[in-house]
Amino acid sequence: MPQGDEQGVVFPREHDGRRSTTATGRAVWADAVRGVDPALAQRIEAAPDWRKDYVDLVVEHTAAAARTATGAVEVARAGLTSLAGRMQYDQEGRSGTVDVAVRSGLGAPDVETVRGGGTRVQELVVPYAGQQLSGDALRRQLDTWVERGTIEPSCGQALHRVVDEPEWLDLSDRAFALLGAGAELGPLVPLLSWGGHVLAVDVPKPQVWERILATARAGAGSLTHPAGEPGIDLLTRTPEVAAFLRTAGDGLPLTVGSYAYADGARHVQVVHASDAVIDLLLRERPDTSYAELATPTDAFAVPSEVVDDARRRWVHRGWRALAQKPAQLVTRGGLYAPAYGALVEREDGSTLGIADVLVPQQGPNYTLAKRVQRWRAVVAQADGHLVSANVAPATNTRSVTKNRMLAAAYAGASRFGVEVFAPETSRVLMAALLVHDLRAKTPAPAHPDDLFVSGAAHGGLWRAAYRPASVLGLAALTGLPSTLRRR
Image (cartoon, rainbow, N blue to C red; front, side, top):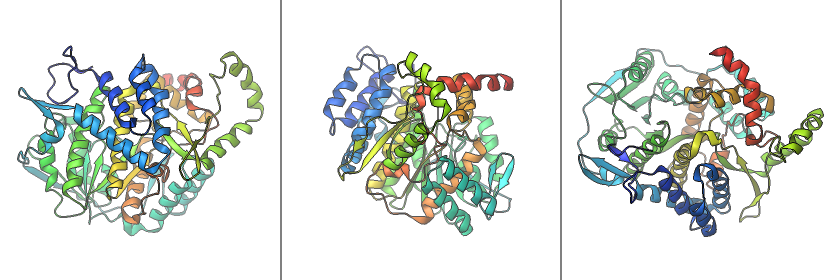
């Protein structure tokens, strides 16, 4: 729970003076869905143990928003409005909403620009398994991932097109505002290698900025950041960040990306700070596009074809079905449970499943923060902005591997049909998908949730035979020896 002496973007105080992340998160989820499913909103508000109950309720929430296109937009708008109405910006004894703070008119900080001295990379090169894949070798690997169910066919098609049209990688005609520029899976390194103009926002920590500035010097683009000691804290200097980005970019088309991360409740705070800035930019600069990476460990509405594939894999388990039967019986279906239960019917008569890949160990604050980014994608798209919001694969990032349980589960995931990627691979793949989305300008899908299906690189989580939560512990058990050897 946040402490009472925090400044900047903070959770609201309750009647007892405490800042409750649980009360705020629960209220936002309930407010978001109230217009399309008031009974679900009531169940959310009445949940006796939110940290335990949120997983099933978020799955229901996802299904409720998936039934109609208008409902999905209504849920997203209501969720963003609820959070914006609750979070506060506290500074020097004054308190108000964050959106008011970012419109305060505070002057922009002085800036410095670093211009890279490297040669622009002119084709898509993906580091994978100790190799640098490009051309036909990359095409074959993309096809293999599609065949295995590691990435969706639409993801493979998008990446094939980037391979086939290398001129798309010349990003000298675009500017990218990266909120959380140093994020491990953020696109900083690829964008600069492809000649992009980056407006960098990240915490004022020397080790972070040494890496960011070294990347800029080695790249082929340019990086602009607040002057003086590099870095600017999104949480405590949100108005200055907004002022910095409102006029930056040298008149180039701007893509603003939400990549900032923090542990625990601060993740919600930093994502809301980012979102307030993004909302302002989208309103003031009509040519602004929005980008984010959707986490694979969430709940998603997926088409029946994906569900059918997962069920086919379940049926064709072979000898494993007999070996798993005793464990299923003893745990009453808690272990080795099949993926996907009842289907959801949309207003157009199509059916879909809800891929429940939520990981309770990541907690409700993480889930809310990532859903806020998805809500912004839905709203921005509904408002006519170009949006790039692709599901990233499970990746061995530092935020994952420092959790022993998750690190072990990732190490054992391959036994259940899931491929976990190295950060350098995911980073380039997801940046290439961003380039595709900006260049191809594919029309918005009929249903907003389909935005997250198109181009998804989920690592196999959606098409696996098992419900992920039912094999998470088993994956961790099998992966633990390898994680212990690495320590």
